[in-house]
Length: 317
Ligand code: HSE
Image (cartoon, rainbow, N blue to C red; front, side):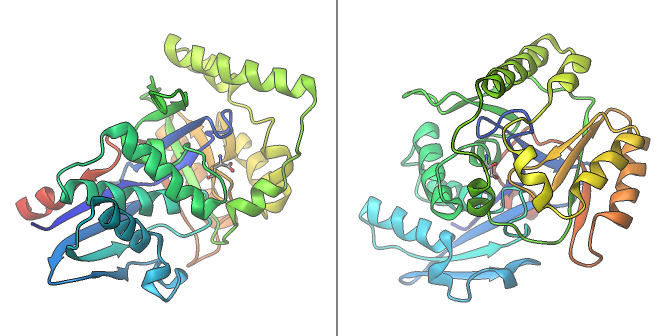
């Protein structure tokens, strides 16, 4: 049996929920914004071939790739000596704030779990994804792996029995994401944040996040937008992202409802419920925020499916 799994790009934090909220992304034009991992049987050993637009930015030695390490871990855990040939199609740039490492890890572990008849249940697999992704980003936080795996907008619960749960989304919203073309390491962007926050900031953070969640359940879009504020990371990260503050001001002029940093950046996101405004904002970002040939932008909606097998789709096409 051979199989291929797709795992979508994701937006950590979603502005208001530092480390606690994340959403999976689906470009409305149907383009692929996420990595794919394929597994095929082989005579012996694990091999990994890396292809795709962003493959060149990964370590040259496949054994240093997190996908290879996921496979080694999986096989040693199962105590099996299978030969498998894996392929990673790297469709997301590393250090982009679009959950690139999460996408590779989720696609790899989802594919391995399917290939070996699901030894892990959903929650156990998600915890494993968090651990592997944490090796790359420097600390375990589920705000990328959870939506990438399960789809939708996920709120982290982190109870012994449940990592996260999905929130109701605003189906009419477009999430325009723009990756400027530079890479920023999550570990470095985390190091910019203060060790401790003022009490008033802690209260604002609690108020914005709880009110945003409340607004999702009430489906009160105006309240949700009003509450979609980042007091934890944006004040300390914005200046590290060239052009971010200017873009944020220009996007507000163009009628975007709010702008924020996707994950730890440099990708920015902005929100609108008006497709023509999203298109105008995209044109502005393409001309002013994105380095030609290096960056990209996509008008997205929330990907409700998360990681999934796509080999059925391919063979039926
Ligand atoms: N919550 C993490 C951070 C997400 O902002 O550091 C990184 O994608």
